[in-house]
Length: 530
Image (cartoon, rainbow, N blue to C red; front, side):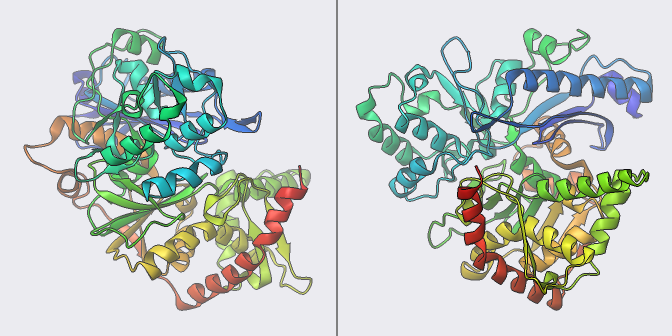
């Protein structure tokens, strides 16, 4: 069936993902190939010391992204998009969106980027005997309780960004298990919230006298492949302001960007892993057995079908790199040169491969926001060098590429070296890998492991979300997600693999020695620059 015929017959699947800097929609045909796309650029803002997006940002961005998709369909195929076979929404994991019984948001959306729940996690992690990261929804809720915030007693429901979008479009207060695992710990044997920890939390806050209990205000947990409702008339009007989109479209469970990244890289099977590198960076490794103990640097989440995953999540990755590339762009414009941004990125990234393996004594910190993996509640981007360091453009660029992955290396050194977790394949995806070879080679050096980038990696999370929507409609009886991906999505797919070079591994380790030793200067910058 042609793409046009697939669209007209409604034999398509749509994934829309709310990333940190872009909302992106991908429409796929019956062979799961992208046939149309829509985008909307956006940016979080720091308001009253809280990283947030407004509801106007969210809905205006979603509507513009969908309109962009509709235009792409019309331009390519001469068709007005009126129906879709299935759809799903994903977003930045974690964060905090509490609502009252009227469905009104009680406080501005607190995103994953906030590192304001340190007091809460110091209570919850030992209570649960389970690492609770600062960005998790339960950490935000308990911190609000500790802060005596007035809104807490009026909470009727709280969720993540993806869960909020799904709720407003379908009327269903649900989450996919992978996304739910960033709200509250999941028991992988049941595929639901951990009952023992739910009871411990209720006991912890019992003296507060709230009318709610924790399970009653959390979204219902669903597994990949389960039906999660249908697009309502109100939802269709909210998504498509033109009024052409019909209600009744089946919707799959909303997921987080970590889950869609695993799907997009075929990394949901035991002993597989992936690294997503963009505004933030995180690695996901599907475990074959439990770790020996809990670590602050490693989060336990799940795949979209409920398998346990060790996640190392770092708040900062390419933001500082992007800022420096923009500075070089301004320099070029000052001299009357107009350089294509993709060419500028590619040239500067490739220059880094000419550098000394240890960056010649240069050290960079890419901390736009706090970085819990290295113990920082706030960030101050910083560049440091010895007076006699080899200060070249190549070393400068390589130091910033190393910096983008340095915190990730801290967590993964625990996972791979201390816990000796086995990984058969490690996939990379995200903006860091857009320039061929460079990001892969640097990541291979950081983790001392071969890194593969699939041909489909550039499609990323929105495509992974569309695949999850298709899986819900197509899966056979007892067909698991891992088998579906391997046999129906990635069969015959090709990619490129880069193995670590010994000199690069040694160079990155040397860089890290200086990086860790100088962290105290970064912490001083946080305290001194206000």
